[in-house]
Amino acid sequence: MMHITTLEQHFLAEHRRLGARGNFTSLLTAIGVAAKVITREVRRAGLNAILGTADSQNTHGETQQKLDLLANDLLCRTVIPTGHLCAVASEEMEGLLPIPDDVPRGPYTLAFDPLDGSSNIDYNVSVGTIFSIHRRITPEGPGTEADLLQRGATQVAAGYVVYGSSTMFVYSTGAGVFGFTLDPTIGEFVLSHPNIRTPPRARMYSTNEANRDRWSPGIRDFVDELRSPIRNGGACTSRYVGSLVADFHRNLLAGGIFLYPGDSKNPNGKLRLLYEAAPLAFLVEQAGGRASTGCERILDIQPTHLHQRVPLILGCADDVAEAEQFIRRAETPAAARGPRAPSLSR
Image (cartoon, rainbow, N blue to C red):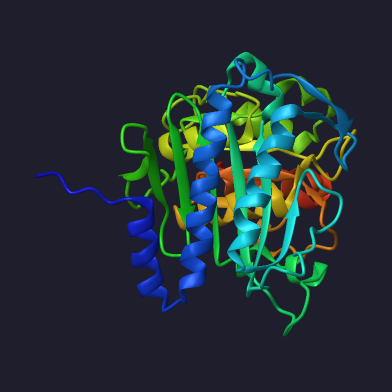
């Protein structure tokens, strides 16, 4: 008889392993419930007239999608009443969301991107939710920005949900990465990908090559290396959806590297540290990969504001290390370079 492990059962096992209180398990379970409701709304978006743009912009000046706002509201209404949070921040909200006075304040913070890739939803492309959980650092009272502005290395849990041909919930509490597929016949997330490990070398790369002319020489040289037929194992293939969760999920499982570097237009990159880069960096490192700005480890960055952007390179460990090597070399004066170091891929 096949053994089935549900998401909640796995949370309880993690609860026992960590010696955590029940509020941690309850918080993760609430995120899973929100993911089920968002799945329903994504599936019925075209029928419920919630496709397209809303008459608003987020704090980054980007036009919001109707489903952005719906997913943001669903998550807030699901997780805040648990009483396990002291502060909540979302990519769609300018500042932190205060916990209402009639709701208990808990020991955790939650930062999330409610619907990553939402501009693709009108075209039936996979989208996702990304989340990050920290322990509060202030002793008591209302949570503050300081509770949210913590290095990614101190996350107690991170994960994402990808809404594709099936819905998958992928998360880590620092002891491996586990993937659960939503079984619509029983309404439960069921363990389908235990202990996910990403390969050491990439088979594919994901980046918006329309930005190539704005890239630094090091990034251009590195992408050329990935495409080189003499690369160890052959040239990487290009696979780019334009939905971060979808690209990351494929690369995590199959072996790939994702790049959204800084460029001449956006020197600090485009992706947000708290809501996208740090949680995915936590996951990829737990799966044996690596995440970097090209110059420093993502998880070591001390955030300075809620919507801080960073360049992001993450995926297979050897390839991210090689990208850093190409960037360092391109930034080193020619006279100081000496002979070119052998490529890690050869």
